[in-house]
Image 1 (cartoon, helix red, strand yellow):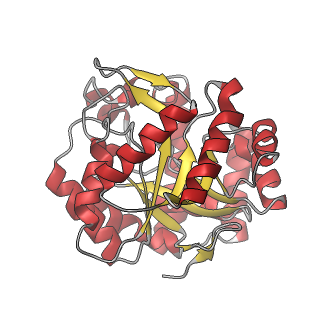
Image 2 (spheres, rainbow, N blue to C red; image 1 turned 60 degrees about the vertical axis):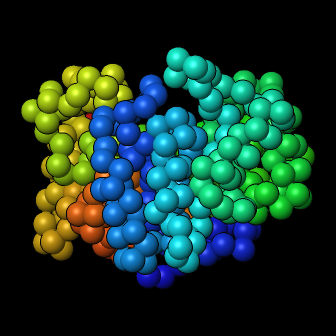
Length: 318
């Protein structure tokens, strides 16, 4: 699988990476529902065997469980790039809270290293810029951790341009992880142009909009989702948004059909068309899912196919 340089880092990553949110299981407020650990490990191993060379996780995914599973899956084999995050924590009741205090981040990085069972984190990202007044303190701490060798590269997630500029006054922002999909294309307005101009490596999350554009989502399936699946509360999974989103997924399926690829691959390819985007995070819960989506690393939309999507978006604004 071909790789691309990730911004100003020395890393060359595959166009798609494995997202490890769902494999965190049912722990915490941001669960995707129950998940079998052995299936998760098999999924990670399958992704790596197919050529994917990076995994994106975070402590909050399953309250540390996602990182633990990633650590188990990569043990004893050539290590892929491991990307994880800080700033989202939980209390004894499993309730989430934010902190960007230096002391908190010091504790978080040590905990992540232990759960992942690695000596150095390839990319450490501020998960959310919250609390905003603590951005400078947290970014300074990441610079220090990089200097100490505990992390190789530093980046941010969910930052706006103004917040990026504040961080850049202290040290260069090497990577950015924004949400970006046909349902949430807002990054195109400022974030992606700014990142492209300043050579910030961009890896986008939720290119299939949490499964809405996978081609496998239906109203009936959404109704059957367990109560502990966070998507049950997402407005995009409810009317009046849902019908429009499923119609968009249907169009992507029609575009993919002659190429024998599912709607989700078309959705991912659309994000990778943007010159600012280096890679897209693909969440998978089974080997079969990653096998179905691996073609997204190579599939490219034609200009006429991209135009079909543009026409739909113009006629059905979000």
